[in-house]
Structure formats: structure tokens, C-alpha cells
Image: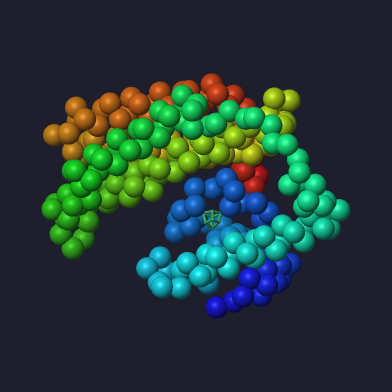
Length: 242
Ligand code: SF4
């Protein structure tokens, strides 16, 4: 396994040599299997060396990634003439905690409610109930919708949380801010979740009474997110929107 210092050099080399789109991985949905930009994404390329989630080497690898990242940050600060001691001495202003924001609370609670429902009813098992070796087109859509729900369920509240972390320029009406970018990918994920739940409801109409409230809650979260981040849709995600 590469040491933190070797990892840092490896990343620098990759970034220099590859034809990567800067920051593309910050506002994507992290679903690399379905992404057409893998060859232009530094994050994808660098994570190819990561051990599997069940590998005993995973924690050592993550610790090395952390140290390599700190080395890069320190290098950058030195380059910019920033003294780390000055930063440590700076007073951090009191900021509202995004977890207390009603939008985050709603998205977070909805994700856990959904998770409970998925655990109880296991819609993925129905795919196998009704399919033979070849999935019919209808079952294929159902299978894709279930997969999308599992993928995006917790993703939305995580991105809303990030979008609610205040940055200095948000109030000045800037569009290309981390807040707007995070809110935009949350809105995209919400659209996909709503679409996916509609397909699941169609295929599990014996559970329509339970699924319909999920759809209503997601539509409310979506509306609330649009109001909270009115400029989010104008944000241009590197690679995806330009
Ligand atoms: S940009 Fe594509 S390849 Fe890169 S992390 Fe996001 S989904 Fe994965």
C-alpha cells in the first residue's frame, strides 16, 4: 500500500497528466457505475486503488488518504503563504447548525422513515419473485427504480446538509457557490427519487397508501429546497452542465 507521502505524489502526478475536469466530483451523484465522465474524473481514477469495503486494509488505506490530504492542504497553504498557526488562532464565528434547519430535519427524517419501510417490505425481493432469468421491461424499470431509491435515499439529506453550511458569498447573490452546487445535486436526486418511487408504487400497488405519503413528503422537500436555494438551478456543475 502507498504511504501518505507516496499517495500525495501519485495524486499530483495523476492531476498533472490526466485530462480531468476540475471539481467534477463535487456536484455529481457519486454513482460512478452510471457516470459517463469516469475517464475525466480524478476522484474515480484515484479511488480505483482503494481496497474493497470488506477488506482488512480498508481502515489503513483511509487513514493514509486522510494523511495524504492533510499533506496536500499544508503544501497549498505554504504555497499561498498562509500560516497554519494563524488559522488555529482565528476565532470561529457562531454559525447556525444545519442539522437544526427545518429543511434538513425533514429530509433526514424522511430518509430514515423510507429506510425503515425498505427494510420491512424489501421491494428488491419482489424483482426475483416475478422475474425469470430474463427480466421483462417492466421488471427492469422496477429493478432500476428500487436501486435508485437505495442510492439516493440518504444522499439527499447529506447534500442538503452541505448546502446549508453558510459560506461568505451566498448572501451576495453569487451563483457558483458550494451551497448552490450542493443544493442543485440534491434537487436532481430528489427528482430521480420521486420518479423512482412512482415506478415502485405502480408495481407495488398493494402498498400505495404507504408510498403516496413518501411521494408527498419528497415533493414538499423539493419545494422547500427550491425556496431555500433560489439560485441553485442556475449553478453550472463542472462537466455535467457545461
Ligand atoms: S463525476 Fe462521475 S466518476 Fe466522478 S465521482 Fe462523480 S459519478 Fe463518479
